[in-house]
Length: 96
Image (tube, rainbow, N blue to C red; front, top):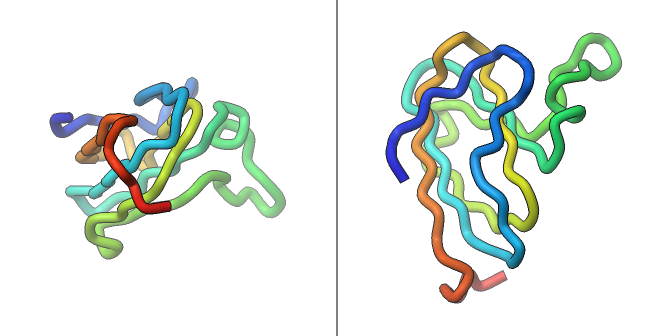
């Protein structure tokens, strides 16, 4: 998958939907953060103390490889977060 621009404006973007476990590689390519979740409310409704929900990944994390199932929603920390998503097909052994 190519470089995507993820915005910080609700609603959160649906990146992909997986019916089986897949391995997803994620890399933030600029100085911002991307937040990932399996549903929109986790990203769009701030938690206690105004904390952003979801799995936070920034440039310092490098390439992050995670198994994922279900919808993959993303929301950025800035208007134009540059994120690379590499998705592996369900038939690939993801070694979970």
